[in-house]
Amino acid sequence: MRIGIDARKLHDFGIGTYIRNIIRELANIDKTTEYVLFCRPQDTAIAGELGPNFRAVPERSAHYSIGEQISIPLAVKRQGLDLFHAPHYVLPALTPTRSVVTIHDCIHLMFPEYLRHRLGHAYAHAALWTAAHKSDRIFTVSEQSKRDILKFFKVPPDKIVVTPNAIDEHFNAIPSEEQVVNTRERYQLSHGYLLYVGNIKPHKNLERLIEAFHLVREQGRPELELIIIGDEISKLQSLRRAVHKYQLHRWVRFLGFVPDQTLAVLYRLASVFVFPSLYEGFGLPPLEAMASGTPVVTSNVSSLPEVVGDAAILVDPYRADAIADGILRVLRSTHLRLDLQQRGLARVKEYSWHRSAQRVREVYGEVAMGQPISRPQ
Image 1: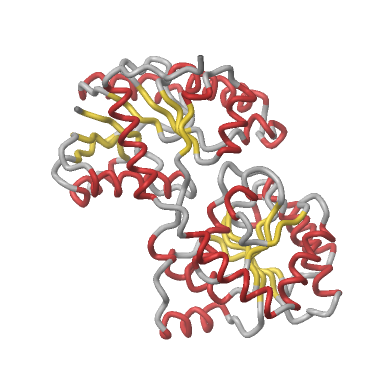
Image 2: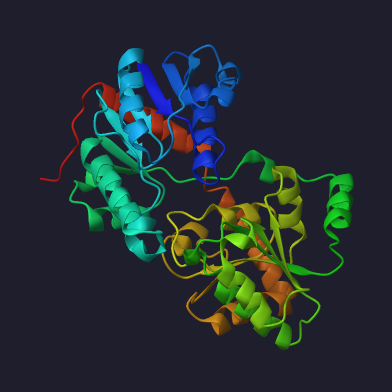
């Protein structure tokens, strides 16, 4: 059997984590199936790291372009694939073989106002519709995402297979003392801090996080800093205005991208990890923080309660005062912090890339053999 996987987003946040871990675990559990990875030319060496049954094919077409709608199907046909996996929601309509797709979330349909123009919304809706209806199976990462897909698209529930995300292994490793000291010195971490990790798109709710941070400082924690890791602040001017409004220039720090090893240390040194997102298909950063032994405050909406279970403080993300109260509860109670740390470390163990990849491989086999979807009687 020959299976193709679109790996062009290998180094992206979120989806890149999914691709890297799924193909790594497939390499561990399956030594006989031939896998063809469609990669950016600079990433083709990845196949040699995975095993002799992996082969990389350069693919230069741009994401969300007309070019990929033509180039990907032609590449699939040239490679003689039995199955093609699109690990993002774009599955070209002309794909000439059986296919599976991973739809991580329905963010573009839930919050269409966040797209820059109507054309972007139309493209996203058309791509998601095609992926949902053309594919033989749909993978998604949470039961909440499955419900969202069923809300927007009339597909059989059994067509959707939930394969949860998990954390990268390096978050389980304890950093060396030298790494901790170097990170403290480099980022001048002389005070306690709240930490957010992710992008700064509007649904991430960072303006309310900044307001909540202001409230926390006003209620007796003026020494705290807020560190935001992800995109640069210049991409969303409203964040700059929020920082200016509360005169927090010295206390809110935007670090941009940081290497994984540095990120692992920053998670461990944080007083509280705060993730007040309005919508997530899964929400991996709270699990990464839990694996690092850091207490988590996150939203009580979307997939986040499903992901964190009873191992985090859940708050109303639409109220800055509720976010602040959740943070202060953790900061004021040593007992609560220790309890959340223990619960978090246990919760993380419930998620496994190995188990998810095993299920992915099972579905590959079912689809390649033409096994129909089981439908309720």
